Length: 273
Image 1 (cartoon, helix red, strand yellow):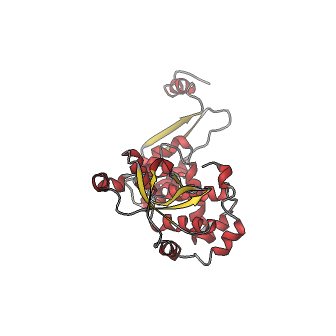
Image 2: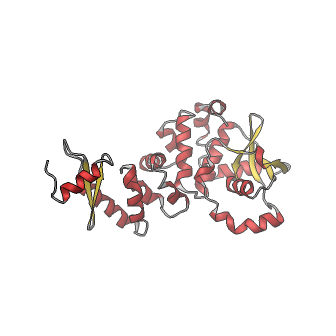
Image 3: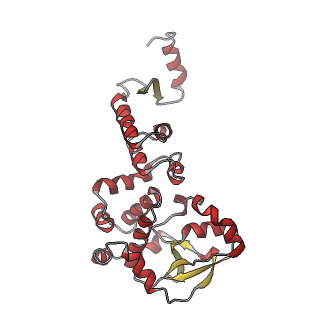
């Protein structure tokens, strides 16, 4: 689905007018109830795509692996919820089951079309993601696309989700974490409470810190993050490296790989500036 297609998906004022109407998890249940009398149809797996706020890269199939053998043998017992966008079916609920079907080369899937306006689908998807406690990167992608594609401000997102300024801000900035760290969030190793502590760090420091705080409690992780922040030394004028201390370790970051040998010579006392 192209960005050009999604630009017509939502009118900001219309969405705001529905915030109070769908301000609770009832948004999910009410739309599903209204479509329950619809007919389940078999759709080609290859013809399906995620709703514009969702991206399959943010999901892990770990929690559906236990059902894989049953699905392959007996098929899907429950339909995926889809919605018609530009005469194409997009998935609003069931993206992980669709991903599993693609991987296992299941050609067709049972689907049920939800009936609702574009703005209702936006709120449905957001509430469903939050109710299902998907990892925070799912929300991060959704929030960033609400902003980038649909032009919503952070306050609008707070109104939609009933989250605080700090929560929304942190979730939005998870998107900027390094590609090495994101899989740890997706597989559940790194919680949102710990992942947000990595946001201020440089990309080359994030993975090291992530591995250090995974076994810690959230409070211990926060203390370690404060310790690193307090001990971190920016490069002084004219120097080519910076350093920070983690417990008994001295971590040195060079600006250029070519400076490593020069730095080693200086540490050994064999080269003077």
